Image (cartoon, rainbow, N blue to C red; front, side, top):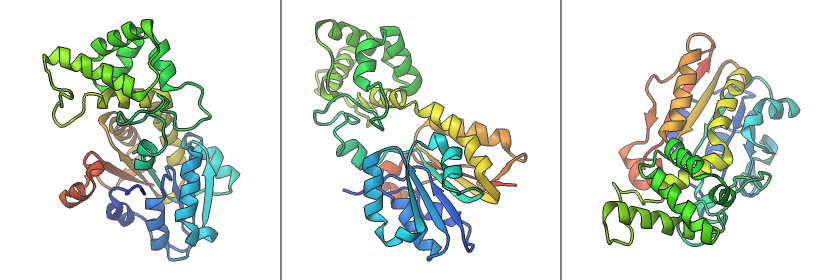
Length: 300
């Protein structure tokens, strides 16, 4: 299965058309956006793609084999953008794209416990270079620390109850898999809602959704990475260069929005005052696009 990129046409509309254009895809994934961008470039310029996941880089090389002469692949975290561009002599960039969504293969095919479906090791690391897994967090952090993660990064209303449940469970046996954690969360929800349903869905969401999101953010330090990345991206642009950012939840979008506002009419100008969302047609065809928001600025 190949990941379907969101807001494809909307992203392409913001790419400047010029000879020898330099484009950076900071979150390469399955190269869906990159392939479309390279097609639009029509053999001109270069694209540099970054991904910390070695499997994503390998998949991207496969999908972009037609554009081998135009593409540079880098396995690294986009928080190191300035260093990456300097090492590859790829400065004064015309267009930078950062899509903060996680690709479908990462959730469903990597076996790292990102999803609460199936049974996999509770890992959730984006790259194996990272030390601490989700299993470490769940079994070693205090109840108070877990509660704060679930509340701050997942906005989970039963954060304290779930953290307490984890604290009790791990006294008997470590929580090793995504299924064990999800079952514990479901039990808390059934008790809190006085429900006998195996999965007491809430507003269309599985009860494990927010806790799994929170753990993933904490394990990969996603929000701090975004904060590190944004100033580097703006500084890496040429005059008239554009930075396009796609977010998928309010925590990410708030960081991007506030940073762009802080540099508006100083370093950049907004190309869309309000974030662009997916069309109703795209939402039907690709449900993962429902929460996507695109913000674009241009360097002045």
